[in-house]
Image 1: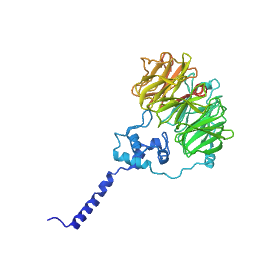
Image 2: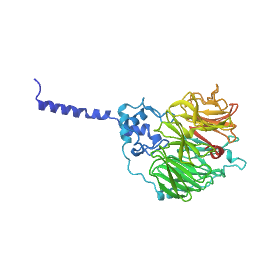
Image 3: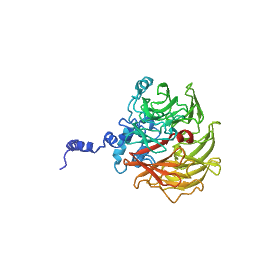
Length: 478
C-alpha cells in the first residue's frame, strides 16, 4: 500500500537533504579554477598580469557564450590557450559568472603615483664607452621577468636586470641615452643607457596598456586601463599630470616627427591627439574604434582595424579622414606588420589572427596584391632594408621566408629548435643579422646572417618574448 502523500513528501525532502553534500561537491569552484588556470596570466585579483584584466566593465562587449567559447577554444596567435580538454562545461560556466562579478572600486591617483617613485641605488656602470648604443638590443625574458641588454655588434650581454611582466615593448629616446619599459601592473622602469643601469621606478596604475616617449626623452606618456587614464612623466619619472579617460585605451604612440602623441580607444570611435607640454587634448571622430594600427613610414597615414570590424582602414592624419578601405575576414596583427619597398613602391605585410596566411598590400593603391598560405597563424612579420626576406612567424617551430623581390616563399624555412615555437624576428641596426626567439622555458635567441641564413650565435634565455634594437625602434619602425 503506498505511503500517505505527506509521508512521501517528507521522505523526498530527507533524500534531497542527504544528497545535498554530494551535489554541492559536484558544483565547480570557479574561484579555485581561476586561481589554478588563469591567475598566473590575468592576476590573482583579475587586475591583469601578462594578460589583460578580467573585470565586468572591460568584458561588457562579449556575451556569456562568447566568453565561454574563448575559455574553451583559446585565442589563436596569442598566449591564451584552449581549456576545452581540462575544464568541463559547468566549470567554464562558473568562470564566466565569476568574470561578471565586480571586484570593487579601483583607484590609483596622483598622490599614490608620486609616493611610489623610487630611485635605484647606483651600481656598477655596465655600458663600455666603445659600445655603439644605437645598436643596443634588449631581450625581454618573460619567465624570469628580466630585460637583458646586448651589444648588437658582438652579442655580448652587458646587463640583465629585474623588470617584471613587461608589456608593450620598451621605448628609446632618439639620442640613445635612455629607455623606459612598463609592466602590466603599471610599474615603469627608467634605464640609463649611457651608463648601463636602471635608475628609477614608479607605479603609475593598477593595469597599464603601454607607454611612449618623446624623441628628446623628456616626456613619457603611459596609457592605463585601470584606472583608465593617461599619466605624464618627465624624463626622470617624476609625475607631471594624470588625465582621466572616458574609455579604454588601445594604446598611445609618439607621432613620428612631432612632439605629440596619439591615442585610440578600444570602446569608442575616437582618436585623441595629445601635447605633453600644455596637456591639451584634441579629439577626432572615427568611423569605428581603432583597436590596432600602424603608421605608414614616410607618410601622414596609418592603417587601422577593429576587432569587431570586417575591414582595414587607411586613415589620413592630415585630412582626419578615411582614404581607403579593404574587406578582411578577421583582425590582422597590424602593429606586428612590416613595411618594405619593391620596385620603388611601398608595401605592407601582415599576419592574420586565426588564419594561416600572410597578406601583401600595395599601399599607393591600398589593395591586396597577394595572399600567401603559411604553416600556421603566427603573430609577427618582420623585415629590414639589410635583408632580402620577410621573416614571418607561423606559431610553429618554423619561421618562413618570403623574398621581397618576387613575393615568393623560399623553399628553405628556419627551425631554430625543433619542437619549440620560433617567433619575433629582430634585426641589428644595419640589418645584417636577424635574431629569432625560441619561445620556451629552455629557450634561446638564435642569431642568423640575414642574407645567407647561416646561424651566427645562440644565446640561452627563458621565454624570450621580445627583442628591441635601439636604432630600429627609433629610426626604422613606424
